[in-house]
Picture 1 (cartoon, rainbow, N blue to C red):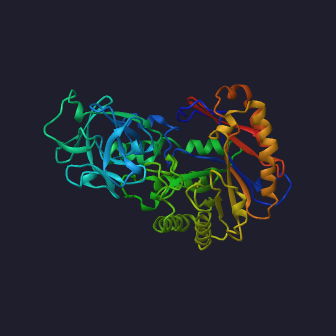
Picture 2: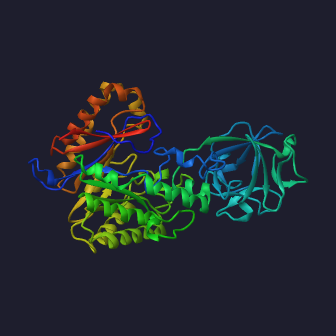
Length: 494
């Protein structure tokens, strides 16, 4: 059974699912199991799900977080923030690496700030000489870009143009408006990466006026009541709804975020009540970003969530959501944070946040499930079972991805299948026997980036994955297969 939903945009074979057991019973009682789908790309933007959202953004290859390198046409040398920032800028490198790479902060379609490897910004605050010494950006750190394909002229807001000098300095004292044949004031821009396409990039790319209409249209049409009806008719009894932290500030969230997601979430609960579904609210994007990815609304790939101020702000969001929805009969649970980074979020920081978040939810509801997502990266989910995060109705959310790990690209199809039985199954079994929170396999894929695997193996690979994860408790799973232009819900196991 299939329904046509917004264009997925990538030819991949993926499985997104959510299932966990609500009772320690070995009987096949459908009321004791949750079978949910994730409504990704709706209230938290992920550009790969609907790339067309960005089609109208001017200079859309220069969004927030785009990584660029600048090469002087006159010297044929790269602009460099030595040691990653903290001193004057030189133009003396024959090859470009991290010190010669800058992340864009977009102010308008033509105005940008340049963030260095260590976090400082290029600045004109020290007279004519450009340095990489500003910890936070303002007017002195804002540059106007005049562009001719890959060639740039860069000027300050006061009208002065940047140029390179014969002694390899970068200065802001070019005497007039340069032409494209004025090599000392012309730079060649190389875009190294442009892989962040989230709420921040979309809203800031369009600007507040145009972004409002884009977001309103998207939130109105990407998911509708008819989708909830379809879901309920096909064996699914819950939806997981990712939200961003700015939802607590509706209708006027901090810039550049656009209000309206709270109203959409209210509609989702209304539809859920009509069609007999439960809702899991998932805090997908936290202040400062917990993983540096687009789906956590990171501005430039940085992970700034683990600060006292950002964590407190996140707890305030959990308090807002719990207070608003605790008495709604459709609330199944609240997920406190999606996919915190193992590399950037210390375990003790996360555990402390999870424990406090649990207490906040419990202050409003004794029955709502409190869901703790594992750290992604090099981390064992068992660490959360050993932390004793809460006494009742707790769930650990597991995300088993092969698609993003280069290790699996080296495996053929048969080896990918065997990995499920030899590696994933023992992991799930050990967690099931840990006498702790319930297991919630929220997202997984069991295939690498080889698109031809989809046609060849989907009838075999997915049921193998499902049966592997389901062996202990006979779960029912639903899957979503992403192909160009169509999203298919299909029952694959009971």
